[in-house]
Length: 222
Image 1 (cartoon, rainbow, N blue to C red):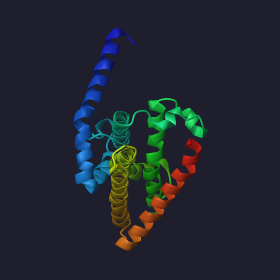
Image 2: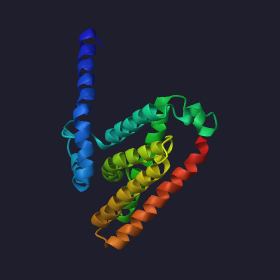
Image 3: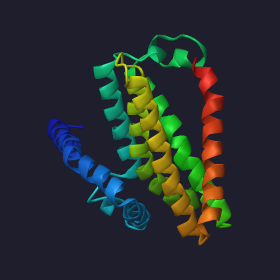
Image 4: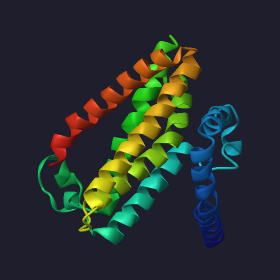
């Protein structure tokens, strides 16, 4: 790579990173205010050529990653470095800095989109392939962003010295689960053309499977 090619690559990288400042809040607000439209948008974008995808928003996995980065930045401001970085037990020994901690959190919160997407594909009686899984996984990543932020903020508030912090943090995390779970119920009901009670059952099983997977992972980190 010659010097001019390097400058062009730097130009592209700088523009891409700075564009996140504009498109991240657009994506976040769209997910909060129009979750179904955003999920349908994610599905439709994957039908386009790769170069034309997500011209108006961030891609769902990038949105989830940046949301976790935002949550991590707030954590550093409020409570400082996570205890997981200092821990040398189990898989936590692999978390040696903020980057590896962020990647671990991305893995954990990606479990929810993955399991929900797998449940949808199986209930639709499609073959479980990389192609059939991609659309529902990407759509689910949009919902996982605000959910991860609310859970992260709730956990942070419980660690503050404020007298009301513990209760407020738990309430925020409960609200996150109610918001996320309610959207899952409606999503399964819409996608599978089910009555709402069956959508609730399908979503509940998916939530339980996700929490069990995370619970099995958690002891390895402490």
